[in-house]
Image (tube, rainbow, N blue to C red; front, side, top):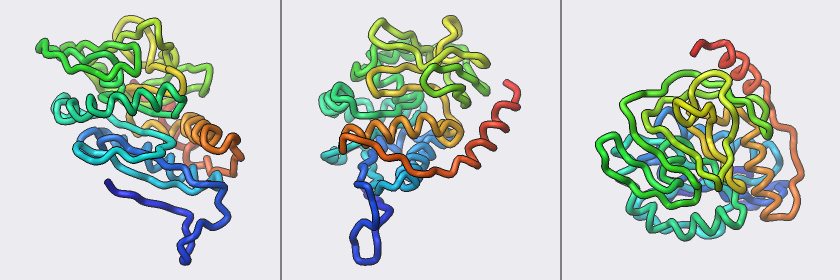
Length: 255
C-alpha cells in the first residue's frame, strides 16, 4: 500500500488546510484500464483546490485494508483482471458494504461497477460473484458497446464519457440509474440508462477518464466526504478551465 499526501509544508505540518481527506483507490494494479487512474488524480487535485489536504492510498490484492477511509475510487478491467481480484474483493465485502451503507462516497467504473453488483456472468457461462453493494447484475454478450456517450442526469447535468464493454448490466429495484443516454448505449442495449446510484455510490461504464470532463461528480464525492467527516464542506476555487475545454471537445466527437 502506498500513500501520497499533498499540502504538507517542509516542517511536516499541513499548511492552512481545512482537514485531510483519505482517498483509497481500489486495485489500481489490475483494474486501471482506459485511464481510470486519472479519476483518483482529479480527486486529489480538486481536494487540494478546495483547501483540504488529500491523502491518496492504494489497495491491491493481499494488502491490509486501510482504516478511516473517506472516499473510494475504483476502475475497470478486463475479465482476466476481475478474476485476479475476485477472491480478495470478496474478503473485503463486509468493510466495503459497511462503508457504502454508512454513506461513504464511492466511484466505481466498469469492471468494479459490475463486481459491486450481485454477479457478472461471462459470455462463456462462468459466474464471478459480486459483493452486492449494488442491486445490479451483469451478463457478458458477444455485442460490444463502444463509443462516445452523453448522459442526461438530474444531479450532475450532462455527463460525458467513453464506453467500451461487452457486459450488459441490468438495474434492480434497489438502485436508480445515473442518467438517461442521449448518445451511446450505456448499461445495456435495451433500456437507455447509464450507470447506477445508491446512497453516495456512483457507478458508471464511462471511461476516458470520467472525472476530468465531469468535475461536478468529483465535487459531489469530495463534498460528501468532507460533510461526512467534518460535518460541513467549505468549497474553494477549483480551476475548471481545462474541464470546460475537454467537455466542449468531447461533446463534438461522433459516436
